[in-house]
Length: 439
Image 1 (cartoon, rainbow, N blue to C red):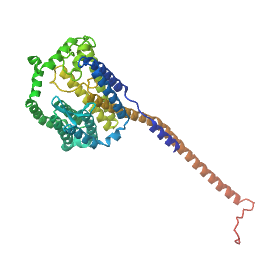
Image 2: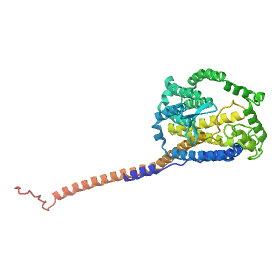
Image 3: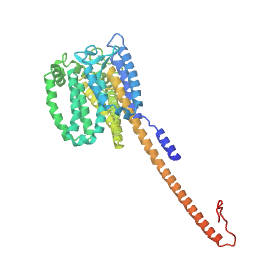
Image 4: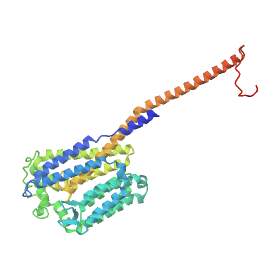
């Protein structure tokens, strides 16, 4: 038992390692973001490094939050799944409270923290992915078999989308819907059952665009930005000019012209256009390659976790990968004129305190998933290595017990033979004491 206790202690002492590919891709994108925020915002204010300083501050806070997320066991997070869902609703409602909520450009999406403003939907993305992962673990079989289990998360995201549209935030609403649909498919829901809610939502989404003038202008300008180049098509036309100037190798880091108060939001929503202008097609391909590495590795990690029956960790990896990939696709698509203009930043690159911090938290969770997966693999390998030794030790122990039993039986038999021999000998047998009784 002492050997077994020592083996169990050694097994518990085995830790994991963080995925180097995930960490490397995230650090590379964040580093590029620091450089490009400095370049794209240098002419926006009288202080050339104002936005860079703020970006570095939010990066530092995000790294601290990511470090905390990397240290927390996922099973501890899973215990608070209901509180996470309540947190999602609370964060989206608090922006409407006078004194706490803050409005920017007609949108009420922020809360005022004094030092800075925080966009609550960025935190909602993280909390919602963790909650949905927990839900898919708890109702994995029901989601595949029944309508009710599948429609519950659809109803939850519907309520969240309703609150987002009241702010209004159409881009984040579509992002949450996309994440929910894809995670339900990955969680085992039948595609034919998901198609019906999607088809029912499409007319409502189309009506939201048609009856909201500014959204309709974005659609018309997206289809032909040159028709109203100085009006509704101003952002997209300048973004396309910046991308066209970059050609293959770019005009050089810091040499962009469009960022000089021609391209609005050059350090946030349209930073990709500045990257294309300064670094060219080759630089854009390198950045897209880093995103592909990050997202692909996250999906690979999720699949491996599911294979090891670590479903909660696997669904978190899937959810974060879907979030990063969809938001990146939309942000790049807007800059290239493939999609109507949406207020979504480029993850880990664009300036924006809320987005930067919460994306860092998501990276911390993803690295925690990789740590626990690696730890589980190493412990399984340790078990496989010590199993033959344990079996051999058990067999040796059993053999020793059998040998001891056989020796004892032989001695007992020998003693019996000796006793019978002594009984027939000429020597007087030993008289046992009777303690005063007459023999």
